[in-house]
Image (cartoon, rainbow, N blue to C red; front, side, top):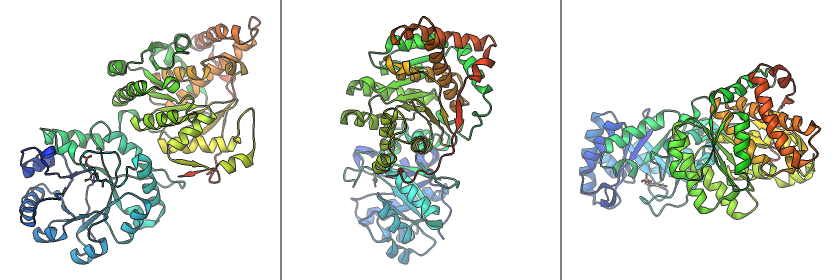
Length: 545
Ligand code: 3NM
């Protein structure tokens, strides 16, 4: 058995001038260890054997002094010569089984893998850990085989989780393009929710070259990364868990009052059509609207404690860059971000835009209609069995999914993305991956005016901002506030159709809020039509891709 190793911050060295500059590698590695690196791989593809052994020896002395294991990339002979803790083998290097025979059971053997098949073989041959990549394109290694992204790594984690004790116990790190701006989110997203109730398999660490070696202060760079990979991100400080909100609705009143009291900013990066309406909806529910599509001012706005809506309605390349800046700014301080993937899946540009946004950061809530949520499922790496969908026929309106398929779809995405997902329709489905609800409030007029879906996003941004500890309950409260106002507006005598509905709806949003704030909320809460759903695994319809 190889030793117990902390893989959380894995440094891979690089001696090329482009990254190391004129500095001494051993000095740089020592600083990185002082900053918090937990394991070092000496990787040098060009030096002669004599230099490799000399440098490896010096590195090993520093590593040993700080109790950090050293493994050598590719060169078993060098590892033997200096008697360090092990080797790391690429797919074209010595086979793992041969290395094991040479090095024995006590040495660490790591393997680079980029597919399930490579992972399967590496585990079978006895690798202690897997370096899974390439996560993101990187200038450090141009000849990487394949960029597999978060979805590709999740697939491998899922495979390991399902493939027995040995596979589940094999440690993993991800590699390629990891840096301070993405490490924390990657650690959060790289996990494989299991269909059983077992703890999900998570990634054990990040492997990094340039983000530690290249900076002029490797110690500070390592220290920053260490705290990022070992602390939950600001947006995940309150874990999503099973909720009893369907049976105890009083938290809805609390959530509504919090919006009124806190008057949170609802920062909308949205399309041209709905800006004015969204601002009015925000005002009526008690929020403070800002319509700014400029990513440069997002860091300042994020600090004000409000919520952000990313509405893909006008997703030009320029808009997407601004969106990415804003998502990252809000993620950094833990202020909620809502994704409204308007029209996702309708064109290939929008599919790409959705993928780009989902790779840009974390969303606290994703909302959309059925086709948008199907596009989100695909972008999340889930496979939808369209035949199962057609066989099941239609349930209501233009929907092609049965209620149980919808519930399964929404729950799968929520669990996989560790977020809250809302599928809007005549009956809305809301899930945090653990609890899934059907909500049947609302009115058909909402489907006849422009921006009603977009302004659900606006509403939920304010609700999540004012209720950070209970995003799921906040989302339900915001949705009910919105849909009950629509019911009340549609009932009014002065409402003759969609045109007169709009101003009446704004009035009723305001009235619903004031009723609750002025303690007339008991009647309001009785109007909530929510039902908890028992969701099957939906395996005939939605599976891992
Ligand atoms: N192996 P950086 S990517 C050494 O995909 C290495 O197997 C990779 O460098 C793989 O942290 C890579 O600077 C370089 O992006 C990673």
